[in-house]
Image 1 (cartoon, helix red, strand yellow):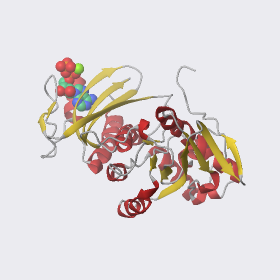
Image 2 (cartoon, protein in one colour):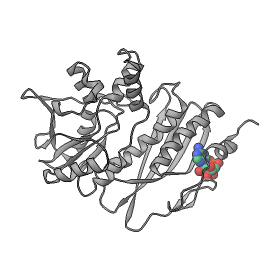
Image 3 (tube, protein in one colour):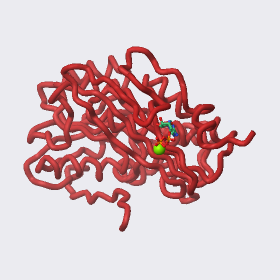
Image 4 (cartoon, helix red, strand yellow):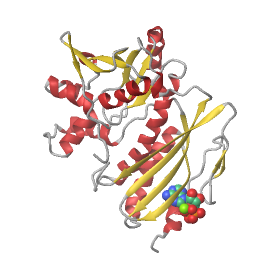
Length: 321
Ligand code: ADP
Ligand code: MG
C-alpha cells in the first residue's frame, strides 16, 4: 500500500525513546512534552537544508539524513550544550520508500551516536527540504557565547580545516578529483561532519567565546569578533591541515582553510591560563585542538605569515546577496 503522511511517520520516524531523556510525550500528540532538569536552561537551534542550495539535488538520502542532524548538533556543540530532543520537518516531492529508509537510517545513526531522541515533526509535500530543530540543555548561565571573547585570549580550532571545502570543489568540477582514498576521505568530511559535542561540553567554564565553522574560519571567527567588539590575529602557518591539504599548493590550502565552509569544527577563545586544561580536553576527547592566534584590541581579522600582517576579508556564503 502506498504511504501517506501518517503511515510514513509511523514506519520511518516513530522510534523508541531512550529512558532518562525526560520525554513525557513523544510523536503522536499535538505537541511533544519534555522535562528540563533543574538548574539547566534550554538551548534551541533550527537549521534547514534545501535541495540545490545546501546539498546537490541527487545527494544520497543517507548522507542528507546524517548531515541534517549533524549540523544542528554542531550548533549545540558550539554553545557547550548537550542535545537531547530533535523535531524534524520534512518536505518531500513524493513518499519514496527507498529514499525514506535511507534518510531515516542516516538520521538515526547520528541521533543514536549523540543520544538524541526524535520527539516530533511535520511532514508535507513539496520540493525536497529538511528542517531540524534541536533542543539541548545547558547548566544555567554557562553557555559559550559569541560575545564573550576577551583581549589577550588565545584562539583555537578543533580538527583540520578545508577538507570539506576541497571535497565540494572537486564534486562541482572546479578542482580535479583526488585518488580514491583521499577523495573518499574528503567527501566523508563533507557529508558526515563530526559535531564536536564532547569538546564543546568540556569547554564550559574554560573557554570564553565559541562558534562552529559552517561558512569558513574567517567568516565565522569574524562573528565572534563583531559580537565581542574585538579583533584577532591568526598565524597562517599554524592552521591545522590534513595531509591531503598539505599536499596542495600552500596558498590554495590556506585559502581553503580560511574561506571554505562545511567543516563544522569549533573555533573558540580562552584565556592563556587555560592552555594546559585545553591540552587535557584535547587528549580526553580524542580531538585535535590547535592554537592559531590571539584576540587583540584592534578590530578586524589579520593573518600573519612571514612576519607580515595582512587583513583577511571574510567571504562566507550569505543568502539573499
Ligand atoms: P498536527 O496536525 O497536530 O500538527 P501532524 O499530523 O502534523 O500533527 O503530526 C502527527 C504527529 O506526528 C505529531 O506528533 C508530530 O510531531 C509527528 N510528526 C509529523 N511529522 C513527523 C516527522 N517527519 N518526524 C517525526 N515526527 C513527525
Ligand atoms: Mg503538523
